[in-house]
Length: 254
Ligand code: PEP
Image (tube, rainbow, N blue to C red; front, top):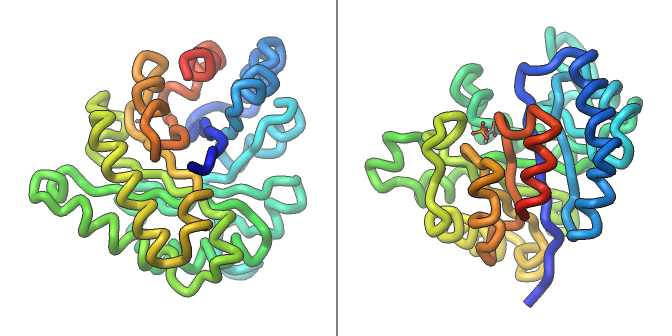
């Protein structure tokens, strides 16, 4: 069996000012959290707002800093967007793509995600691709159909050599920010299903090495259950990543 590292990634969404970001950075530096995590085989990443990317990068020692989104084009008339070139200039080489809030409130499609992921991979970025079913799709027993089409379309026409820079986050929409987290059995079943899709689309090596995360109301009290699942390689965490104490508790409890 291949042994994969663990990834704990925070998504701050539209939270934290630049000064909040500085305070958070100081606290995790004081905890020496990146080193503590690394000794446990855990990679730490956080996706703050665009405004705080540079601040977090400069202040939080060793932390992987990720964008929450990015455009597929390198520049141009795309008001409010940000490009890989802009991110690269400040040393950011990771981006989340396809978060359910972008899909839900801004109509982002799997094809939009695919264009963005291709741009990221062409620029040697790591793309954290979010997939997950809505509450209605879950109730209608459509979870696996939805996941299959999101993964297949989002990652279409990508070369296996580049797919190694993709991380997938399985985030059931009904569990995000609701406190209604999916059971560890559901998380394991769907993450293992995603790995089988990746094996079909690419190859066993890509599938065996890909990091697949669970996200949705992960807290210090339940993170251990998810990370104990053989196909869950980490967590994408919203609310519980906002405070340094709670982010530290997530690391402590893995
Ligand atoms: C998320 O924003 O991706 C998320 C999982 O949020 P929360 O942990 O707050 O449910």
